[in-house]
Image (cartoon, rainbow over all chains, first blue to last red):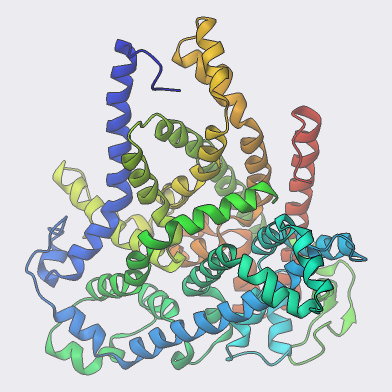
Length: 293
Length: 268
């Protein structure tokens, strides 16, 4: 639409401004990352003086060594990985099963089953009843407190349902005639055709579990069980006193702000590294959801 | 969800999860007479309204601007960068906000540079709303453009052609072709935004606020969190939570009805 349009003077001025605005957007979006990276390598003195901007001042790796020598950090990091893998696996199994069932138009009570799921998008039990329930079920301090309440995201469920509905029905009928039972059809016919949507769903779930902190913060009392996000939140909240850095802190005094910067960098790194490669799957997932959300 | 009955029953820790005895609307009356409740109620409305005012229209503006970028690779790069903050944990966002606004952070360095006094942003209730809303924009504006950009590509080029034939300049084309083209998307997102109006970023407020900023930062969800889980008034907190959820439900249903009557777009 733009290519065929003659370039008026006003339009060229607009393009110029547009470039300026969008450059501004990029700078504002990326600046915090660059700044935090610069801080993580800077000396405490330079940070306190407010001198760190885009490049590290007083370059050193002391803070990285301090954080890396804290065993709790690594335990929590490992927890994040474990929780993410287990939770994503369970969520995919649950969501696929529910979505596949819902995609069958001849299912009795289908409307009601969809209604139950969609209703929870707009009205939930609320924090306190959930807390009482999870505690009552004895799931405190266990991975299940993180996994089960989030095993089905209604948005993802609807995306998968829409995808399954779009698959040709004839294929499944043919498979049934060839003697496959329902599970065989799902496993051998439907899922191989759904690789793209499964990849998107895995990413959606994995990112949300990787990023989640509140469930763990709420239901876990032992620091050995925390995911790294809760570790970071405790740093930010100042709940982790200097004693947890005991030995290291006496060597070189690196104030909390610096340690925060390093922890943020180390936590955000995996996301930043895989982000460019997986971004398009997210976009396509959102599109799928928008078609029939 | 059935656990919400504890809002109307007296709850004893260690007892039945459905509470011990019926107390009717006692807890509802209790919070209606609680001055703190009305303070957090106001804060919730203000933060919700500010978020809506900024976070709803800005993605539309950004999408329109991105749509005018003609180099495809450049456009894709801009999109990738703008989506990025969406994938960060709320804890990371809070950490970044704290670092940016800290006394030795870049914002204060800039204030110092232009000769202003340094501000301890996170301790000042007057700044909380600004910080909250701007970080919200930072995090959501790029991702919010996705659906608009998709809607923009579905607009028929012939419509632009016809508009040009009729002598419409670029502004008039945007007004008469582009904006009507993305209206259904905009209305749907507006309804969804209104539906989550009351549930203003609980996690983010919880991470960013502190007792000094309670006067402007404390919202219904954080208040009920403190009441329920820190002070162990489970029933009282559940009553507030139920109230909040009901208001949210009413909001989304009425927004949906209004939009169906006026512009003919409905969520279901």
